Image 1 (tube, rainbow, N blue to C red):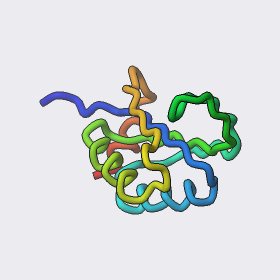
Image 2: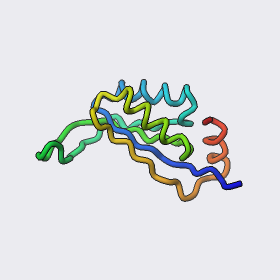
Image 3: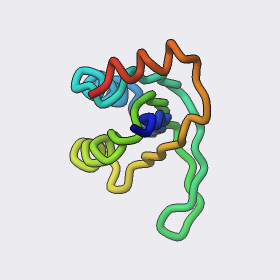
Length: 107
C-alpha cells in the first residue's frame, strides 16, 4: 500500500478572524490537522488587468493530499473571494511522529 502524501495548503483572506473561523471548521471536520495563521501579510498581485495590493492573512494547513479536493470545495462554498488562493504543496519529509499525528488527526 502506498504511503499517504502529506501536503501544506495555503489559503489567504482579507480578514484574519474569518480565516481563523474557517480554519477551525476544517480542523473540526478533520480536513486538516492544524492551521498556522499569519495574521498580517502584504499581497501584491495582478487582478483584472491591474496590479493590486492588499493586506491579508495567510493560513498554512497541514493535511493529507487526498483531502485537498474537499478543502478546495469548502473554500469555493465559504470563502468571500470569487477566486480564493488555495495552493497545496507536497511535504517532502516530516518528523515521523508529526507525520503520524497529522494522519491520525485527519480523516
